Length: 205
Image (cartoon, rainbow, N blue to C red; front, side, top):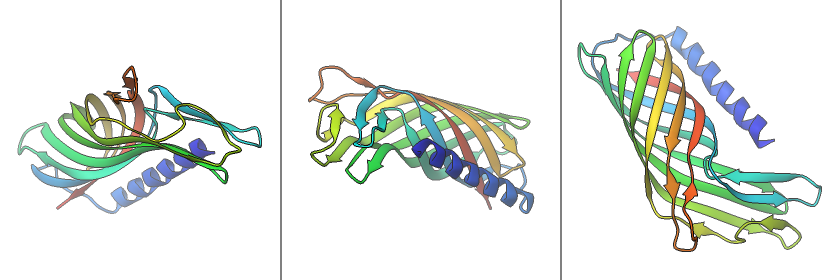
């Protein structure tokens, strides 16, 4: 169910962005622009598998699932180069009447982009603040995992990003992030790497 809801949400954002792009146009000159983005991601280690009374189960991944945020980018005048900085919220969760589990973090990204035609090729670093696995279950729920909340150290990772531009304001893309999370409570680091599809909207002056 959460996958369907996430896909529906991202599809709605993309449709609204494309509609807005038809009615607004801006030049390709240099300068600042606001950035709004959202995405769906998969990957990383499986953190917790939950089995509910009705027989359904769900898994929370260290690289999932819903990502959104905002920031600013700067396009150098008469240049194909841009610098983009954003802050977001990234989480995966399973929710039911008899229990909730989630993994969340706050990604701070600094990326450089090269523009050619309708294509943006980017790479940079991401710094994840306050990664945390939280669980709250009733006694009748069976949990395969550590059984309580775990806070992880802040972590730095690498990002590769590709966008296809529709006009000046809308982009649809693919993002790959390589990152690991560590905690004093765990013997080994967790792989939080993921691949995802994204939609972005740029707010030009």
